[in-house]
Length: 94
Image (spheres, rainbow, N blue to C red):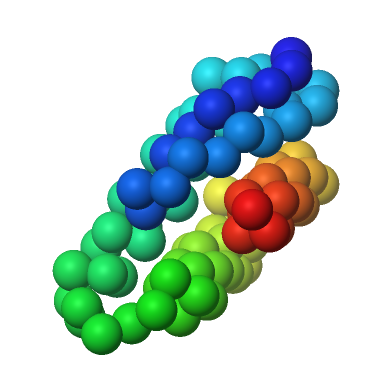
């Protein structure tokens, strides 16, 4: 565990992975990057902030649908989403 370098929407970030495996943080960053690029390709006029907000809404919808499905495991999923939000918030501050 330690510092992890990731690239999201062509911008480099150094994140503190805390107790999370570095590969997991990189996987999360890759997922966020893919979502942001998907939203960006649909509209070249959106700012990075707008793309980030729309990405958050998209991921929140996925989480909400998963949380309300019969396969969710509750607490573990909540911890994962909480960690994802923390990492995204840190990344957007830079």
